[in-house]
Image (cartoon, rainbow over all chains, first blue to last red; front, side, top):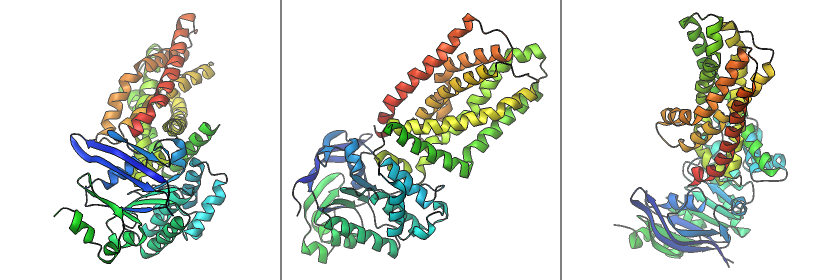
Length: 235
Length: 226
């Protein structure tokens, strides 16, 4: 069961010019929890995830991941990030992409790890094919493999189900269920409420950069995914 | 060792991508050859004139052609948001930067190695017996171009006018290194003795490379993450 806090966000503000994209966001996520980060387009979900992923710094406030600063090397080794872009290189093969990231993550046997993940995501038969020749679904599966290959303790997923084909959705759902069983922590932003709420143990709703709701996922939310927006979202 | 291992992983990736796409080397090489060709038609210099302008012409070509390679260095990471994936990895900004520098350096030196004999043919220049020294100048000057260019490539990567901004920012910064490289190249191509008064240009090039390498490695994390 979730115990200590894996993610602690304290009074985080982020500005784009004068516009406050995040306004005094504070909440914790317990270790082993799966948080669905919800909100309309432009609410600030991606901005918050980018701060958590160490891609951007908050103007004010503090973020602690697994007890460390978000940009600490030890933290980055334990985070798996799947953003809007797939983060894989068109001119490299599937195998070369995974081997590159395995090397960057300091994995002992990059070759073996890359081959294992190609197999797990059903890409082993096209391991030497260049990504530019892949279908969208194959690219997405490769992106999932890239985010998971170093067995991260914390997964940050930005719209992970968007544009996935049914096979990639199945691969991702199985991996996420497996990750939760193993006690890893997941934070995912999404518009696909049903898929997200099925996995989520916790929910956070952001409205125009402010935290509008933070709590456990309830049965009401699962039965009626629009419930949260009607009660805590904007009209 | 870990620093170099991860930097090499990035460099290897960039070189492999470039070998497959030939995106920047082709453009850079074509541009360099066109400049060399046009200048050779533009005037018909005698041996003395060639001796006087050789260094300047050579480094003009290297600097302009180099910018085409450097412009794409970080811009190629925008496809599929690969830059985010790199920054999120445990590799530090300095490691990513150094890896990119190594790849850019290899590409720039390759283009220069092709241009040098072509320059000699077009301008009827006998490459000096001190070709090793000329090559050393080329390596030192090119490292300066690479470090500054790669850093500014990272700074301008998210700008819409990055193709314009990069040379605008890079060339003024490169003036000391280019002056040193031009002076030394002119002397070496002209076959003049490399006297004590020219040693200062070597020292300038080495100091420039060292200072800007250290500065860039220290600043690049801020450039990439803020």
